[in-house]
Length: 478
Image (tube, rainbow, N blue to C red; front, side):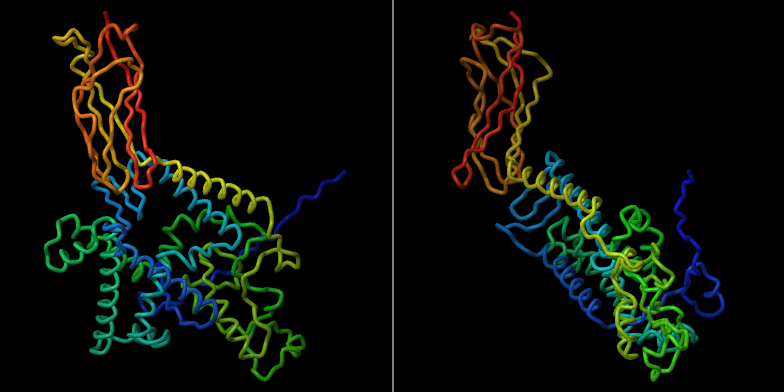
């Protein structure tokens, strides 16, 4: 009995590298990529989606909710405010659920449609396209930018380069101010920064993120995607033959080569030509500088720019579109793409479970936290009335954004007296701390250690009772 091992063809392909300039630039480790502008439905959708993303990013920190900044991630105060929800370090599980939901949503989308996060939603991609747009408006289209960089420095080149970098720095500064505004009140931040009244750490953070944005989007660009982003390295673990990726139809496109426009599509077979006219537009519009005709590569960010470029060429040649398209490896090989498959279903189920846990955690979240600390100087003491006292420090954390009055009671003792305030008022998002003593008669204590609990309760604006029972021990030795 013979067994046949299926062998997959892994013949290496010639990887395209972007052409550099002259002299030293051609020998550099990274040749500059001059991205060509492209028009098409995918590009229009990407720009619209990027505009929505930018609008959300820029507007959200300015929104006021109930008299406060709607989204304020105050690290110094260890308090995250998201509209009516205030998160504290005690809410770490809630933050963990949010990150887990985001991770599995990314896994699910990647398994289904490849690196669409990188091509349509990643901030690096969005800001790079903004910077390229500034380049096009100031230095001109791709061919003019190449010639501009090749010629020696003159007055026109100096002015254009200066204006471009000033525009980049302006975008980076506004981006940095907005980003830092998520962590400190944004209105005061803008006023203090431009009036030179901002503190050291605020100025340092703004200048640091300005430098990062300017460097990442203006200079590093595709290096962030191809060398520094870990997502590009482990994405292949989520791909399968049914994943939709930007792909070149090799069987239809080869043999590639130039031809006159008057040559009809039906006559290509006689000339031993495929649909690809080898115009190189798919390479020129790629933000990472790859040739999609070499097959699936980890540098591809699934932005679809090459799809629009190729479809434009096919339309001019009167050829069928979608020589390059979003499709699966199974479909390209002549099979049928299976949308519903175990890996995708598994990610979807886990994603739903994590969303359920997140919602349940938010719904069942009690906007009150109580912490007790026993007096470390003495386990207990007997006062002049012959009663036993245990001393505690109680901390009440109001996790809501409204001021509440809390009542303090003891459960577990038949009779007791609290020496201290039993009704306290705590502002929204504040922590109230005070010492108090619990007094009781030794007759009420049958054991050396009595389990008791502090009951802290209040009534919210809807009339619902909010309470927390914090267990502790009451000590006495006869």
